[in-house]
Image 1 (cartoon, rainbow, N blue to C red):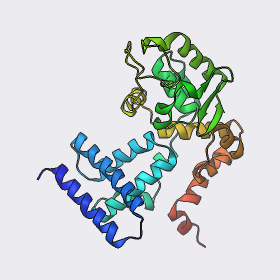
Image 2 (image 1 turned 90 degrees about the horizontal axis):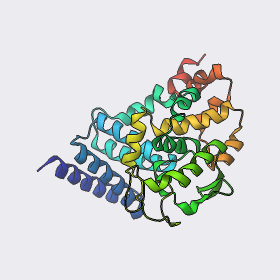
Image 3 (image 1 turned 90 degrees about the vertical axis):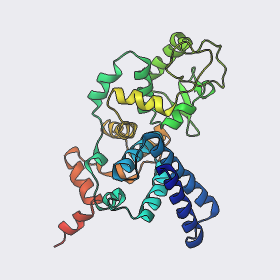
Image 4 (image 1 turned 30 degrees about the vertical axis):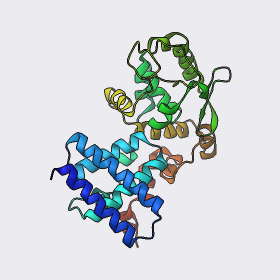
Length: 284
């Protein structure tokens, strides 16, 4: 029996375990099964084993690809499966015990500006991800019908979000003079707003998550850090939580609470709030 067959047999045993010993609904169990199947498919594609390294790599992909709510749901499915396997090196135990420096990592505005000054389609896509706080799913799903050129708005998260002026100008220029080089057919409202970067295709082809991952990798960027940076930069501009939530049509998590304090106290505040050892160190 090959490793892929063994992994899927383990999945079947795990689903039987959930069905017989948990109070989860059948719909929830099916969602968990789907999430874990996607992880096992990733292992098969990359010839990886179920271990700490492959789990961390896959979590990074999930974090870049999905919205925060979807990421939490999918990582929860994986955590339950990994805990059931009782791995010797379980990364989820480490996540509970401490927050790594990656959890505080973000990109400085000046460093992103050096990237955004580059005149390329790929750079435009990175900028759209950043400024509109998009997951890969959200960017890929955008159609021409979602874009309002007259009002400089775009339909995202059930809201017509205002596009920042400079980005709005770049999108208009792309649609007016450059988009036709990526798709030779005439544009319909149902066509994707942003296309696969391959040139001169006979029809409008949607982007893929793999293409977006490669585009970000050329600049050594992660979308999860890009999104985090967007919120922190808006905080640095003086916006309060309500203003940021209104501008991006999101709900800010407690993770960002320390960043609304004075810059010099950010990491200390974050440590005191989130790190379990802080409570021990602060005991009288």
